[in-house]
Length: 280
Ligand code: C2E
Ligand code: MG
Ligand code: MG
Ligand code: MG
Image (cartoon, rainbow, N blue to C red; front, side):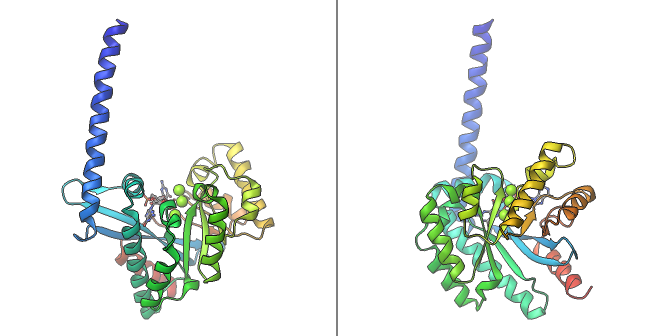
């Protein structure tokens, strides 16, 4: 029996690997053509001030519509783009496109305070990152102070010294830095103390069960309290319910983002939100 099941499992297992490999090849091949075929689109999700619910900023979130396989989520293709290096040209497109959209909002008088862009580890390791960002901002006449980049905790810990000096340069230029997905990596409070950042973003997984799990509630309470004692504003991502919102409101969490306010939406819907925000 054991042998029988063993064999069978192996068969399923190898089939699974084969399917996963095919899927990965599809993504790798597709990514090379996605930029020139204009298959990418930016969605936007608002971040609001907890106290007033006014829009403080918007985060650009990349969407890929594959001509044969339909929508592929960034959770699936961003890691592949990272691995293959494709994230470098894709990341430049994201920044360029988002800056263009923001300038458009400015000309309509509806631009929010911050435009937030996700930067993955491979991009941060690119020695040309800051130069490329500078030239895109210059070309778009985009004021650096309106840009915020979101980096994940893990990137900040590998190559600690190098990351710190890069982040310092980025911030000296006027760009803000947020630490995304905070709490999921391995950073200690000592790291947190040394990171040159402007905002701490509590990971969605904590917010997800903050009302069900008192340990999680205690952790979220502590993160906000520690961040505030370091003069760091805090944003909670993945806020889906009014209960979660109220809980965070009571803790003086500075900003909120999540389905409770709005999911990521196409640019036309974002403009609608921004227009309402500009003249409530
Ligand atoms: P992230 O930066 O942590 O973005 C938050 C993710 O949570 C987004 O998933 C967003 O759609 C989702 N989300 C927001 N609010 C809620 C909520 O209330 N409930 C739930 N269940 N989910 C919520 P998305 O858009 O699939 O992006 C996944 C990740 O892909 C992002 O995580 C980011 O790390 C990466 N990514 C997305 N766009 C880009 C990009 O342009 N460049 C780079 N380098 N990475 C990107
Ligand atoms: Mg993010
Ligand atoms: Mg995040
Ligand atoms: Mg996250």
